[in-house]
Image (tube, rainbow, N blue to C red; front, top):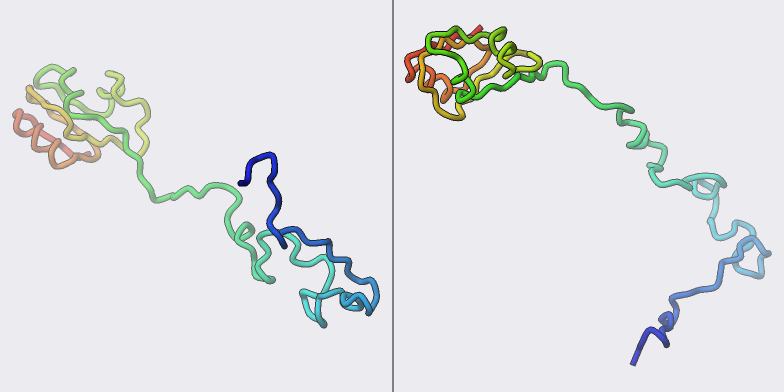
Length: 147
């Protein structure tokens, strides 16, 4: 039975070190086991991970820093339920939303999402509306105007 006190490496798992270039009689003289000519026969070659045979390696093909998509638009998000802060009949535009503290930075504009319920008629002016948000605003008797 094998226990921690009598562990042994399996037969053939550890081999003696290859001593290359020690004369023809050793079997690894002259070319030192590298064969004839060619890229693999030369010294100082292919000794690092990521070598792709002379092709431009992946780590050099990729950009050093992050990619920022210039066409992507990020919108400041406001839910319909947040519009209940405003009195009935009020005009809710980007300035009113920033004054109320609902929007910090405008970014590409404001998008109204349909989360929650609205119980008063408001005129909401924003850059984008979800379908459900538009329906809820109109059901409450208000207007959803795209800027």
